[in-house]
Image: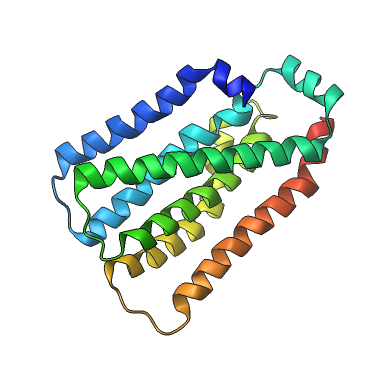
Length: 206
């Protein structure tokens, strides 16, 4: 938190990115239908997550990582990164929802449900990209590696989020499907945390 407060330009840059992206979408599509509104929201959410979370490791210098190596354990370090990025994505997802709804309208029937799904999805994407950023930081082609590793992990989660978020537009599912999808997303997030705790110590030694 102390390091982030010293680099406030990064946070303001993300907020500017959110506003400018949604404004460009607004200029292109004034009032989209519900399906288009939902799809564009998750696209913007994905790119906001990439810009907000990817920097968590990619901006760390080798000297600073060596300093971290001397003062803390790998498990404590990766958990702190995951926790910070979770909090960051809660804030960024909330800002995205507010600005997006203000500019693009709000076709949802249950906006509260959509907000919960949006924040849950943002947190899940944040966990994935935190681990991907940790892996990519050890490679030369960092951005390319994140794209290659991230696509097979992000695609099924995005499909579930888009499908689950349709409940906020009044789409009727068979009994139990929204709950099952939510449980699957939460389980996926827990799995990412467990994998990060298990695998990051090997990256830490490198």
